[in-house]
Length: 265
Image (cartoon, helix red, strand yellow):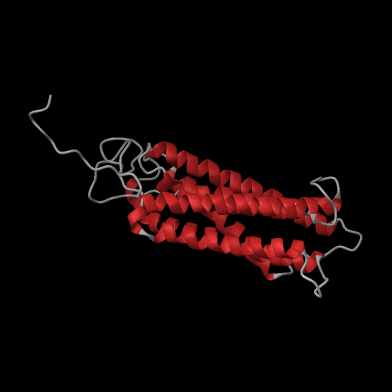
């Protein structure tokens, strides 16, 4: 729920956000931004393909079936990767990718994407917990560093989501503009922190699955190569997305107030 305010354009719309006079505005992103976003999208698609092949063909049981216990655990990396890597990447970059569009619509798209991310992450958490608890010899939950990072990320996301709804979706009569502007820097920072930490969770999750299901350390087979490659690509996505988030050149730009021309009627 990342909004961008600009003190140079103090005109407020009916929702209390400093968008300027028009609902559309901002200059288009430079070519470097578009190339970087395109490369990120290609990397994310590659990671999802690698993960799909790894989980469906080079795992203890083929395919994806919730009823099958061994197959159910594969929904955890699948949904976590789809949620945090794919959907959440779109959510954190949406204001920069569509900065010339109607800001209200972009805001709603941001909320919808984060809602999908939370749905994926909660389902993935249920999948791995029930997999561990329903085994003949149950496994301890939240045992590894990966699981602790994942739990921290989920807590971050829930807090960010709830506060974002309160500060940016409630009407101005309930949440005045002054409070929104005060909260915005914290929302931006912790949102980016949660996103980048979630990618760390995805990367360490690949390592966890290799340790749990592939214990033949005398030979690096195709499955470990895919898992390690996926983790490296996730890190690259995080670096590139972080660059787009911190570079002010790519910041979502509110429209400027047009100059008054008394000769135009």
